Image (cartoon, rainbow, N blue to C red; front, top):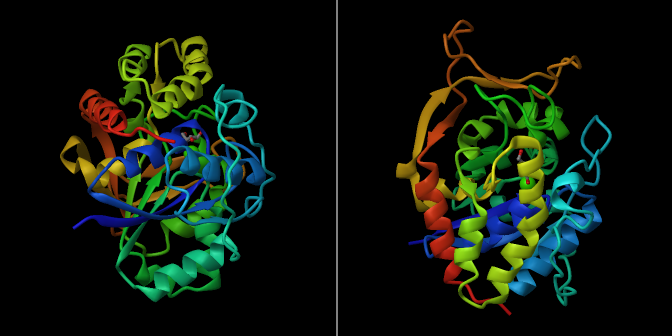
Length: 314
Ligand code: BDR
Ligand code: CA
């Protein structure tokens, strides 16, 4: 039986790759997308979500629009530097024909999880604003979410938006604090693991040996993203941050997971948004999540390419 999931997202190139991987994976039933500002503004994020679904012949999947601002901070949308002005690199996505659902993402999440407690898992690949507000509006959602898999944080690794902090958590650290300490069963996929999953230009060329709209989209969407990595991080490729969350379902054996007490700095200083694990158990608190500190990265990338090759698109 496949695992039913909702993805909360701020698309973003690697967000789009996550939807495609989910659609290409028989172990997963993608039930809905909810959008949040992050990499780009909320309007662009929502349009991108609808357009990628259209490209993948999946416009029947509902999209609910969520929050345009983090809880306390101002939005930066600094992801545009990496993901391009539109959020989708150099790709030209079709104008979406489908519309968003009537409910706000917060209400949509509450409605869906409370209607079928413990049946659906939530995957978050953007800032945690929508989820934090859903918890505050309807605390019963905590026991209704089967599992929450979060792309976010940098535990032993350095940050990618400040020297210490990872983008999704830094964009709304207060929301991350609420979610981390909510009691929902969490699996965290931080930069420690995602930077080991590098999609190279050779992988993209291999994928484009088949002539499909999806392969062309991956090539065009990742071109600037890869140029950014080459310029600033010195390698030929881009990290599959968000797609790696799906390994929790499709290839859990590739992840090295350990239970830890993890929190996030919201004190407002230089380390704001830094996620940290109490490895030495000095605070004597019970673990609040499973953390992926390592992954068989190349094996995951191979699986990704193989699955994406199976999608043809519109
Ligand atoms: C995260 O930041 C965003 O730019 C990506 O989409 C991913 O969710 C990686 O730090
Ligand atoms: Ca993202």
